[in-house]
Length: 535
Picture 1 (cartoon, rainbow, N blue to C red):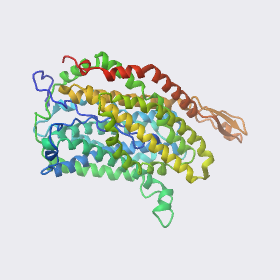
Picture 2: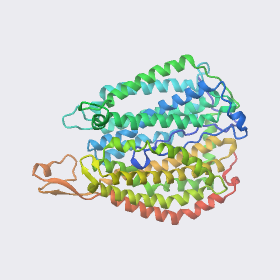
Picture 3: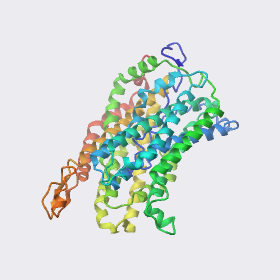
């Protein structure tokens, strides 16, 4: 086992701490972000290469296929974690429990804490990246296999009272996503040496395509095949009580796939070392660099902006899909809305990058915020309209689907506008000598800025929702208190906390624009020297 805890004299590379590949905070299961983007930061080492050289993939086809497949595997637990809140909503789990489960999206936003360890500690004869990749993927497979035998009890399906063990479910998926985040660090690093130097830029393509496909399999495809209604309507001639796929069966299948493919990779794929493109740095040196970067006044000011800029959309992004499902909208149909968005998501970054390539990329970021705030109001209106647009249980008027899809498409435009401009800004200010470390730090903070408001909104919504016992006497606020129902009444929501939170977020967003927009423009105009420090 090798551990590099020093290395001041080593050559610094551009990717010392691997990029954050697929930040689950921004790739949320909730409707406005079903197909959102992650804060990825794969550094392109081929900026100086000409197009002819870049297009020569000879000798790298197998490596590209393997990398894509490894990223697909990484996307499976993330997509599955994204589908769980929808399953919980259909089981009438309260939003405080949903808030607890939302912590499973945090590992990809905090993996920078242990990324230097993955980078520096390894077994030389086994391989620098395989040292972490192989055991991590075996652990993911083991978690899935064990969970497949107990998931019915955990989800309350084996309980007469249908009680979901939300704490255990959160712990299990938090561990799964932590393992997936560790696998991401290893795969990002291996991509640098697995591909030839002229094609290492293809790593970001493998990352994007593979993780998107994996998330699609674990989220959209799973929710569709798990739904008895969807399968009976579109895939079966004779109706049945369950979907074609169950959560237990899905976990078991992918657990086996993880074991088989990891074994094949361990035996067949050899790892080569190339210190020029994947240099080693000591653990202490990497943490010291991060600390020095964080101390920069410009970085501190920008950190405040990243941690507060997404509060304006927190209620919309974390609650809209769950509220639609609560109103009767089929969860599998909501997930399938992601399919027509795929071409848009491919085209948008290309189009938007033309507007963010200049010296002021964050101008697009600022211009997008008012539109996202406005869309939050529209989404709240759609949630309110859903109770009137429902023709029969699970069926809505065609105009409602059309409006929802249009709002979703517009939402993607502004989400990607903010994302691409933010990534362009990060690329602009990051010190080239430690580009990977710098960008990973900024993207980690950006993802934390999306995580904490979403968790807070989920936790608060039940507390500020007003309910009354209609037709009887009883308490509708105490969990497990059935006195209202036992006395012949039913708990009716008089004021939904979702609308209160939406209004608060809109006001916070408008105040934020007044408070921070000027400072962000100043940071955007700073010379790059203001973002550098002595290491």
